Image 1: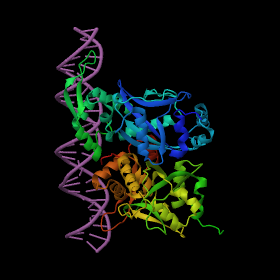
Image 2: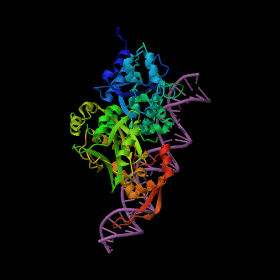
Image 3: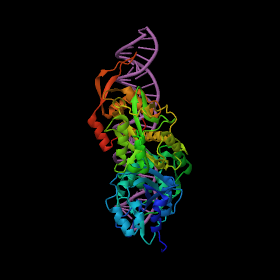
Length: 260
Length: 260
DNA sequence: CCAAAAGTGTTATGTGTACACCCATGT
DNA sequence: ACATGGGTGTACACATAACACTTTTGG
């Protein structure tokens, strides 16, 4: 028998090393060029994009499985990762959708039954620094890329619903999530930070009130620098006070009011 | 072979009718005698109490499994039920804890392997009206009962952590959860309603500000009746305006401020 | 009359919101 | 000079928190 190429190798091993009927899907969010982006991937043989995902090895905690997916896709470790919902409806994957994909992927028939069974997906979302991330995909059979959160292409199974649920969960919890700290680079401008909140909340936020509010919390310090950015006043650069944010994360202090 | 009694019948059927490695656990909350209570059950042969739970039948949605557990334990249908977290750490069930229980329950050896495998638990919480609920347990081998949320006995596996997570989730979302509407009977007093919020938040709430706040939202109407309750002024009775609550539930309007 | 707990009113303080105004920059 | 967008200040509405006072009831 010829040596198999991944993913065929990994996929054929499914039944041996992974827990059956359970998958892990990750909403990986990054911020770039003024817009919030989600990382998606696709099998070249398929037309639909998918969330980066995987299965839970028999000796892995679910969080570890999600971290593994994240590292495999972006090269990043020690990232902000939270479970947010599980998706298990019996008809969540369209009839034939998986069978079709397995056929195209040329998975060994005897092993493919494992993938055709029902799967309950554990949903995680992750906030990463776009510029620190690489985007890995096996060139032989995969593609991967960032998509603006408002321009999502047709997705596999219920993955669009999973993204929608992630966004609405983040929206409800936004006061307790250190969005900017996780998504922005060390030095950033106030309009950038505001942009993230506007993308999640899906509405405009008053520029001036936002600035006052963020500064009043005391987790952000102004740097004595500006960034040139066009025919207008250069915005100040700011940085997060790491210790304060870690305190907030640890003790669950509210980083921001819910109804800004 | 003799006819088997439940639960042995059900338990022995596990591998045939349920999805493996996944369980469903329910935090069933009720309000009685001024305190918030959670329904627990126990095998007579075991010393530790457990959350009411079950498995997902191969043709069931996870929500349906949780509703089935709820109906089997309380007789109630159409209840308020929400998923809140999943628990899947590989060491979440103590070594030998399951083996010991299966031995005591006298499960057929060949079938017991199914139960000894890893399980990822899907956590649901439910708010029910205490007085509408019955408490079902098979007298041959089970017990079941209500426990004050502050007086939980030693529990099986990580079930205490599951309860803690449920409470802290409810606490964070309390503004969006129609707690009183689900937990209280049709006619109730303001101190009763306040008592529920105090139990969840784990702190006292100013009696007078609470009353004003709840009435100002406009979901509660005063009835021209009082309830005699001791050597003091009789509290007014109130009822919920059903239509308003259903609107709130449907459109996600905030029922109460988070930082009351 | 007194104690206990319900109900109403008042006030200070803080937060959210709207908007006027000034500043810096490139064309 | 002007358009564009950043930064600061102010004023008002509203919500929260603290607490004084009154009412009802049983003993």
